[in-house]
Length: 207
Image 1 (cartoon, rainbow, N blue to C red):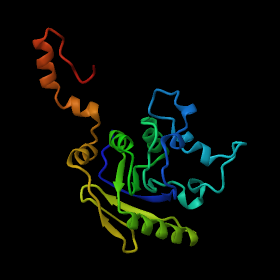
Image 2 (image 1 turned 135 degrees about the horizontal axis):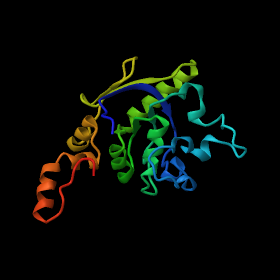
Image 3 (image 1 turned 90 degrees about the horizontal axis):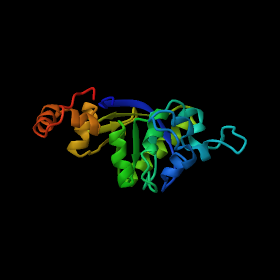
Image 4 (image 1 turned 90 degrees about the vertical axis):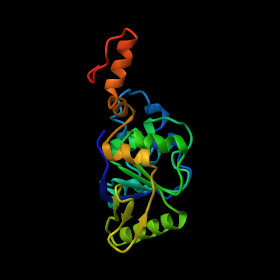
């Protein structure tokens, strides 16, 4: 997993509450066992019309959202099914940060396991970000934010600046690029000692 330290990128505003995981990645696309390849199906029912053409009204299809790495959303993002495919699809599409007032607990944890940073901000701060994004888009420009996990700060280029908090364990995992497997591999010596004591061959990093 790639470490996350900073991200400066275009913001894609998704002005909807209670976005569930079946909208993030519909169930008919859950047939792959790899973590990659899901980005093309992200928000499929919203991004595409019945004939397969891109829906020109959908937020992510707007020109100002092209190449976005930061998703701005409303409360209770990632609710519904606990499928890990939801953060897989978001990451595969190119998102590294999701900002919302609140997240479903399992989705929130799954983000950290897949190299994405979910940021909780107060409702009024999220409102302000939507307002700033709308103003930028009305002027025909993308809206950009700069996120610094090490400092716990995000800001734009026009005076908006907020601190955010992430619990120390998740913060360390992102900064060092560690998922659960990576964390386990940091204890190979202890694992090998235990295996040997129980008559099993030692575990190696390539096992």
